[in-house]
Image (cartoon, rainbow over all chains, first blue to last red; front, side, top):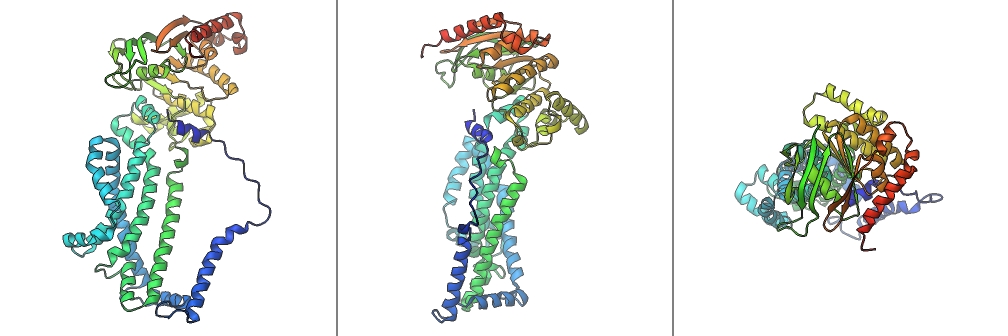
Length: 276
Length: 259
């Protein structure tokens, strides 16, 4: 019935490619690219190719990283800005998982459910969060709730879509196997559907985390007093380009760490995902 | 002693029904029998098993156990699937214990029963392995142990040995015979191996396609001879075995108008 499963389960491990003799120099290309960009940046800022107001040197940014970490910027240290942002993103993530996973499951398992939720999700999904941010502020004010809500709205569609895809792809044979072993509807959901869909849900969360993180700056532009987006925004009004670049760098590094974290979680919690 | 009846069952997909896949099937399986169903692809073998399992509902007729209509899948009719359909998020041991867990059997009791079953299918040492660490033959044995844990009256097997290599397949056939003898469950085996059907079953049922219907229902006793001590090679080269095999092959190929 599920021929795709056959292919995956029965695939023989591929013969290892002939080991390249010596060192694989191509692996150094990404590192070389980064070094080239930093060097270019260095020359552009120190040789006066670009005004320091527009492009402070890497050293100046490092220095401001130290300053912001120790004595803070706009009444908060770098760590406090970072934690404020992380708190919002993970708060929004928790909220959107709680809402999005059941909606995704309903979309996948009921035609009526799909009829209700699909238009909403498909309308929301391509909308840039900045477009509906003002409306959220009109409705919910400029407090923490609005910021978390905007991030959560950006995160929900990928989780809903991934959950629906995961639930839809549950193997019919496995469902039948569980039913012929005596599973009730609730037990099917808990012991077969959920674990089958989990790898897909985790992938959805991974995409959502990326979407949420990039919405963060937009959300924090509005009347926040702490957070990486706020830090960038308020530094920009004083032409504090070094802090702006620092903020961008921190946001980028955190995004990479998210990705690594999600991969580790995937390995730890859904090791069967490649064997479904 | 129970009897699973497939009682004048016609089955067609869709509503309104399209051309029937199975027409007027009348077949009963006693809980002491081993019934093998053979037939060309498209003769509705798997649909027949799905009807017995309760995955499909008959378009006409009914499936019942001594008068009690089969309304859907149930642990009294456990199924073994061709591509094992094990749960990859569970270990071999947890797969075997699945039915017991569903019933809320307490863990110590469950562990005891699972260990017994694992030993029975010769996997005592592999219980804690992940499913993808097991070979095809081991996976099928986990699937069979998982079905047996439900303590079924009938074991419905859909090409359980289809994906295995020839040698493993022969060993698994002998294993299935012992298992049938020990379990006390009636077996419905779907297979495209004529020799396999003949070696294992107490009755071989031949289906013909378009629409699927029973064209022969032959009682045989080669499996019982194996259980009495004959070797499988001796049985399979016995003139009586060869003659019956050829007869079955003729029966199946008679339906073969395409080639």
